[in-house]
Amino acid sequence: MREEYGSRELRRADLSQDPFVQFEHWFSEARQVEIYEPNAMVLSTVGADGCPASRTVLLKFFDEEGFVFYTNYGSAKAKEMESVALVSLLFPWLPLERQVRIEGSVEKVSTAESLKYFASRPRDSQIGAWVSDQSSVIDSRALLLNKMAELKAKFKGGDVPLPSFWGGYRVRPQRIEFWQGGKGRVHDRFLYTRADGEAVNWEIDRLAP
Image 1: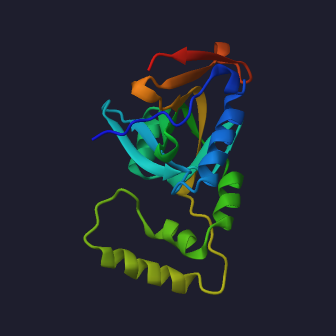
Image 2 (image 1 turned 180 degrees about the vertical axis):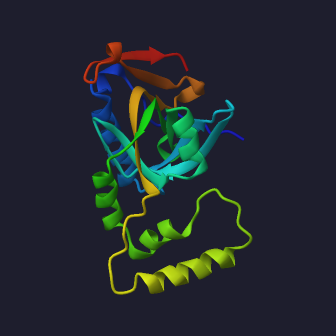
């Protein structure tokens, strides 16, 4: 099974010198064509045992400081990031024949940032953060639903507080690659790399497909 790419090209002259500006441009196009969950990204981590693991999470915010997502601090991915604070992200925007790969370090965001985002979530999602002991073994879904009902009753009539075990992570990129599918599998790939680790200076290289 294969699809022939080539509806677009990516040239060096098309690129912004700033990868975050370039990402914002592509992200905006992904939203305009109504790609399903354009902020869905594959997060890959490595545990203390050296085994890689991947799962899909949702990008909630990005700027020149990095890319932010939220999770349970007791989850498997959180434990892996605590062990090895290096991760990769992948945005597979296949309808546009594009993907973006991001590699860098990861760190927790401030409690204030987590609280601000948590307060913006739907109420059921807020309560859901309290319900799940993420990645732990459970006997049945009924246990989760019962706990959900109990917590809805507990927090009825008041704000749902931010759980101490839930919050955000920021991925600070060192490398960002923009990939555009090409005819005959001659794809366009451009890699941004932080020059000498500096925050504002990026080197841009074309990579062979």
